[in-house]
Image (cartoon, rainbow, N blue to C red; front, side):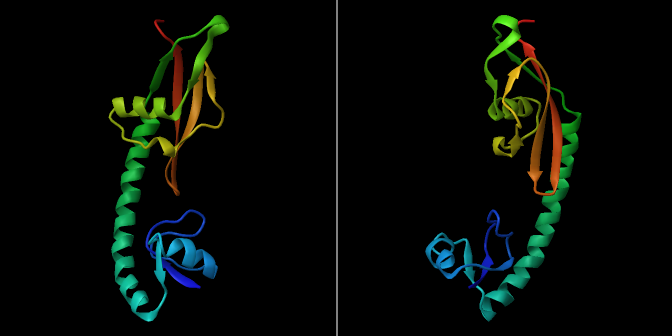
Length: 149
């Protein structure tokens, strides 16, 4: 079944894309959740106008994400934690901790866009990937230091 996406769907496409999906997937999930509409002639002509508007919006979002990416690259993220023997952390540094540190520095980033490859459980410098948009990704250096030091 050919459908037009009304919102971004992971592993399927972006808003305004015309994609072919299984009939059951469209009828049972996508259409009831209002993520797609059937790709008929009326909907195709209506979506063309919306696509032009979307392209302008996407360009603005990308520009904004690139500016935030530059701020993140220049930002120094220091997180202090209590440590035990041999400077091992109690717990770990999470994406929420990093998002809160960025917010305190004046940079708004959703915690789900922060990707930690391995749990941060030691003092030192760690590199964390932040994916603002599928095409805009940056790295952040996170300094984990001993609390009270």
